[in-house]
Length: 162
Image (cartoon, rainbow, N blue to C red):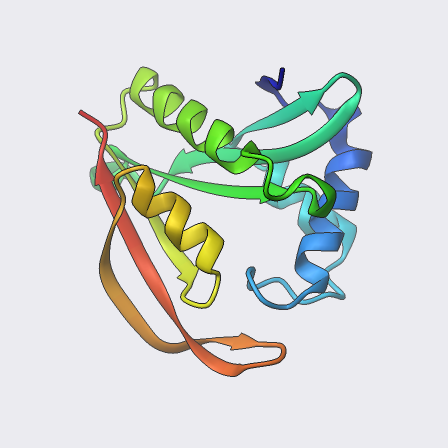
C-alpha cells in the first residue's frame, strides 16, 4: 500500500537521490545533470510549493508538487511536476500520485491543471496523462534537447478538474 503525504525536510535526502537519478537521463526534465542540490531543493520546497511524497514504508518511491501555473489572474489553473524512483517505475506509482494530485488540486480550489512541458518522447508520461484525462493542447517544436535523440517536441497538456 502506497502512502501519500506532504513532503518534509526530512524527506529531502531521498528526494534528492530520485531527482538526481531522473535528471541524469537527460530525457524527461529540463534540468541538466550538473544541477546543484540547492536548485533541486528550491524546485521542491520553494515559496508557495506544495510537495508530496509517495512511500512504501520508509522507502520513498516518488514525489510531486502542486503550484499555481500562473500568478494572479491565471492562478486558478494548477501545475504539477512528478518524479518516480527509477526502481519503482512501472508499478503504478505515477498513476497513484497523479490521481492524488488531481484530487488535491480540486480541494485547493483549482479549476484545471496544465503541464507546460511534457517531453514528447516520454511515452509513459504522455500515455499516463492521457489516460487521466489530459489532452495535448499545444506542441512546442524541437523545444527539448534530448540527450540521445537531439531536439524533440514538448507538449502542453491540459484538463479541467470538474
